[in-house]
Amino acid sequence: MSDEKAGHRIDRRTFLSGAAVAGGVTVMSGLFDRRADASEKPLHRQPSTYVQPNIVFIVVDEMRFPQVFPAGITTADQFLQRFMPNLYRLWAPGVKFTQHYTAGVACSPGRACFVTGLYPLQNWMLQTRTGNRASPVPSPAMGRDFPTYGKLLRQAGYVTPYVGKWHLSPSPDEDSGLAPGYLEEYGFDGLTMPDIIGMNGEGFEFDGHIADQAAAWLSTRKPGDGPFCLTASFVNPHDQQFFWAGTEAERYQSLYANNVPPLSPARAWSVTTAESDPPRLGYPSVPPNWEPEKALQSKPSTQVFAREFQALVWGGVTDDIQNLSNYYLQPYGQGTDPDRHIAFAPYTYWERALDSYTNVLSMVDHHIGTVINSLPEDVAANTVFVMTSDHGEYAGAHGFVAGKLSTAYDEAFHIPLIVADPTGRFTGDTDTPRGQLTSSVDVVPLLATLGHGDRNWMSGDLFATYAERVDLLPLLRSNAAAGRDHVVLATNEHAPQGVNWNNSPTHIYVLRTPEAKVAVYSKWLGPTAYVDPASFQYEFYDYATERGREGIDKLTAFGEVF
Image 1 (cartoon, rainbow, N blue to C red):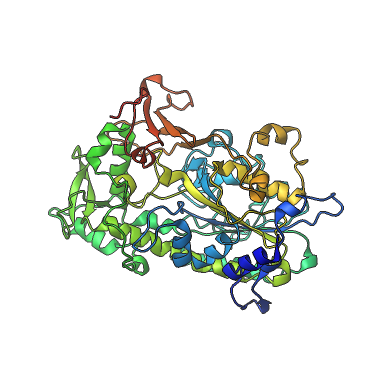
Image 2: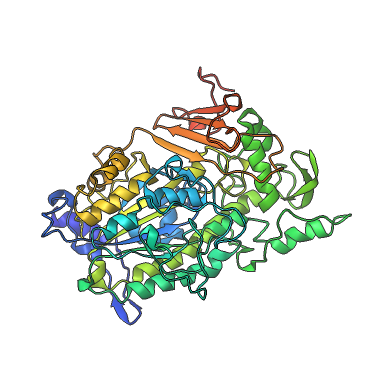
């Protein structure tokens, strides 16, 4: 790399902007100033000389890849620079994967995919846990025998602290006596107890504690301490899930209480006033691919059910463009269930949903900065930063005011993946975003290979498990490397008994290529994984057209627009 080119990069990008003091340790700027292009260095050396990088793995909850913007912003780069400046410090000098997808939705399935590198039907984490501790409420826990990036890195001599949201198994209370080692069988030292699974307002309430806990651990590290992989797993922007029934809980609950006769909401959320009035940012009145409920009638019936169900639990927004101020109740199930009622907000809430989502993204970005700033410079100089999310968020797309459940839309599955390396040993060509398809199940092999220095860890059963995952390391080095020719996506979230009013199939499997996407919706027979062939519903989107890429025009198998 020429000095001129290196200087150009230095001027445009700063990883640690300014000096910070964390835990009494001074943290300086400019770590990327000394990096070399990975294309000029071997990927790894002999095991005796390979310098294992530290890894800081930052995970957020419910962040989709930026795609809808307020006035004056047209790209993801501009969006992050304005609203998530700390994450931008990783994005700008890092490798940015712009077509990265979670293999599973929602929370627990998505997390199991990037923790194990296995698909949902391999790790059997098919549904989101409803509780954070062992309780009488049935709630799945991920099997302890599966490989994880924690186990694989420990085999290479790493310590693997895990801070923040886990949401894959029961967690003890801090004072229960069971706390020490509760994630040991998964390959991690679990430092946050009880688990924070993301109820209303918990991102606002707890993300600062998660950041401080991670920073306290990182700030004491010294270069000779040995390699580590610290996971800092935040709750936000998950608080968006509760827009608007949770963010405006008093208004929401009063609609039911003031009805004659009084009614009860499906869930009375706690009041979180801190997120009730986000700044107005100049978003369009609806997202570009917003659709009214009647437009979903031509799509798999699950989408109509899912929109109604999510509105029942977290609040709906009217499709009536003339309604700019009226809040009202409406029977659930398109009027078929008089015992349940949805609270609807005015049409302006489609825009406010985007304001709300951006607000909680900015909130978590502040805490991401705390983690980045906590590393001593001499430790950070040998640290690779990896950032991703467990799944995405609708934020108004296709008429879903919030959430991520029960569709095949990109907004639920398309997530960020950023890898920043101040040494430049592993990354190169960083000015060029990676538009190749990649999957969250590719992350475990990446982390393991960074830790081991080569892919020799992948032998025996591990070879059979991971050999077909895409090797992300060549993609880190060069945009010329190949990605996937397809990704496989799945969501299997099961609705409570009695609310699936139109008897829709809830097992959704998706094959997505750069050119198209096909989704199959089905039911399973009883308590089995055998598919009921009579339940199949399909959708197909041709990405050669803009309306196909936006998930609006669904095609038949013969290419005819419905």
